Picture 1 (cartoon, one colour):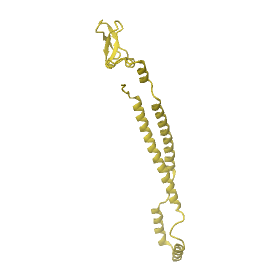
Picture 2 (cartoon, helix red, strand yellow; picture 1 turned 135 degrees about the horizontal axis):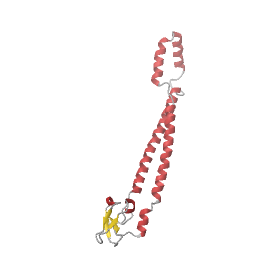
Picture 3 (cartoon, rainbow, N blue to C red; picture 1 turned 90 degrees about the vertical axis):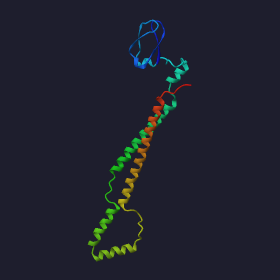
Picture 4 (tube, rainbow, N blue to C red; picture 1 turned 45 degrees about the vertical axis):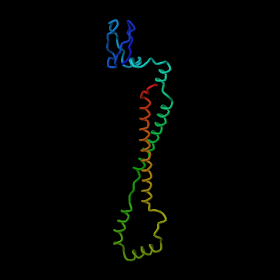
Length: 182
């Protein structure tokens, strides 16, 4: 309930927010008084509250630097994370992996029965001469590793984006919520 002064006799009329824009009768002079709109009504003192000093009113209307700075920093982090997630997600989607270990092994299984005896002997001699450990991975493994790398970066950036957006919402809500003064 808000304290609305009567325009005729300066008596205090208790007005609820639902009466904004209506007319009420003053209990002292019985004249009709126009209730201001809700935005103007909220500028009036509350019935339960003691009159606030000018310093208290200024502190209620003034916002601190911390919430503003928090919103700016979290907004910049969210923007950077969005751009990073978009770029790396696009890179992940554009990397095509033609083969996998399974397809490579299935090709070998299909091709070995078709080889002649001389080719099989040469293949066996190459296996004996060369070590079993590969010096470098197959090209399809390198491509798959690159795709996995872009995917991991996109997931991390998306997680940071989500956390930054949630943090921004939290800071905005705590900034806008009224804090009771003691």
